[in-house]
Length: 463
Image 1 (cartoon, rainbow, N blue to C red):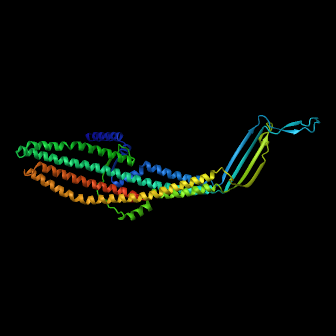
Image 2 (cartoon, rainbow, N blue to C red):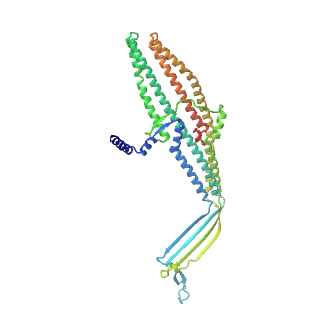
Image 3 (cartoon, rainbow, N blue to C red):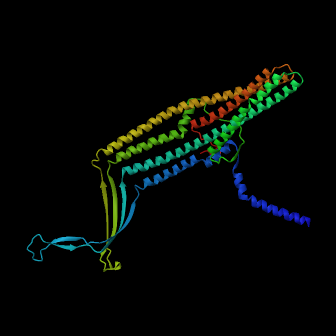
């Protein structure tokens, strides 16, 4: 009986648990928790980026623009229906030659409008030649390519932004860890000093200095903890996830494998072939060429074919609509139109189009010059950070050994506190400098990727 009661109670508690924690709520909670490597952050950011969504919409809008420009050379079919109710009939005046009136200026008014009239029309028009429409189609196709490059440029910018804030979050986390390690070392030294003071080996001033060394690091610890929170908020915003999401970074600040051109000329050549912003301006030059052609084409004749099918009727109120006649008429023809004088409007438009093209070409030349300068700066910063890593990686092991020796000498009473303080400062500086060098190396690689026109996305997301 007791077993049955226990089983029944357990079943009821299980039902209550399911009621309080439904599956949907658990899924929603889990969906706000992220454990992210660098590649995971990039993937998540690309899937949720608002900037990338705007660029995608711009690309769709460019596709709609192409369809709109093609409509200028496709057949245009329209229909219309008109109904007219006569409130006061129209009249025509005829000379009065039959009534024998002596007045030669006498006229007889005759009503010519029916009480009701209607017409139904079907119009078909087809342009056979229109230079402006042709130029518009070409320009629209170029605009679509420009939007594709803009999307690629935005995508690359999103990836670079996520990587930068991810590295910011990592270095803030690691700097916090360095401060905590320094505090732990000073707390250990403080305990050693107190023990030595009780043994009469250390002076009271040594215990006070050990206490101050720990307490002076507390403000740095508070600032570092705050910086971790700030950088994590920036990372969440860059990825497009809610700020209340629980994010854990599993990545580390470490030297990642990379392959970059060794020479500036080679790197510049890669950038000139790959950078989407440069390709955008090159395509913009093509679009400006089409604008010049379009402006000139307004001087050319426009040839169109047209056709019309029309049915119309007129009847008085004493005649039903079913009994009225609907005679049908049809016509086809060609139309040629060409401007003769437009008040110099066409010439002004051609001149403006030429100037606009020259402006874009100047911006293109300026961008090419800036790209070479940027490549030189980015490559130099990358190489400088890599060399600092090589130097600092050796310094850390030496600083750690120096600190252990100074700590041992202080415990044995043959070393001074000043010596221990200096060893601690050197160790902390070595670790900080190495951390900064790795961070600078990673940030330089992100900026160099951007300068070279590389996407920087994980391998499965490239393209």
